[in-house]
Image (cartoon, rainbow, N blue to C red; front, side, top):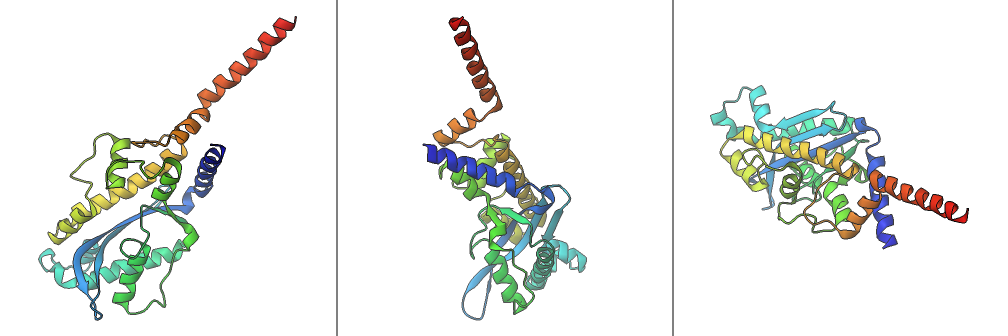
Length: 263
């Protein structure tokens, strides 16, 4: 049990250190479309449609999206599908430039961990469309922090009950969830294919905003999960200021009683 307590305290301490400088903490999520783009080797990869980045100090709220780039280029919405690759490259270049300026920040994300969905998937699309990675700017691996892994380390793998863990966690901490705003990754893809671009960016923005809020709640020990690890509950309780106050009060009262008894 002491090992579990030590590990949980260490995880909480590391999270605090990670967020000590709010200007150096970024939260990121993105959306991709299952409108697959065949390459010359017979492989397929979904196109990146929108990326949202926010900072812990609220100074950065950056959105990259295909429909924003189309608007800049004066491309009509009924013709946008003919320019997806060009527009995707524009947002990937903008994202790449942003990464170059913020490589040393800590990037907190939700399961952006592989080439199917994650930083590697974004890199793959950039290489595929641009043709090389000479100017690609990668975030150092130690600066990428998966919030889901952190929560699992504190509360166990079954910290929520639904397969969409982010949505389930949002429900636990926000009460009612606006189903018209939060979309699953598949629904985001469908909305994009139907050219409902605003729905996609709103969904991604909501997810990034919640990842940010969940990080703050976790640090403050206010994050609600549906099935807490019992050790985690115990540690949260004994470390709570009220519990600590009661503990010290009881100790002092006991000492006073003992002294009176000796007299």
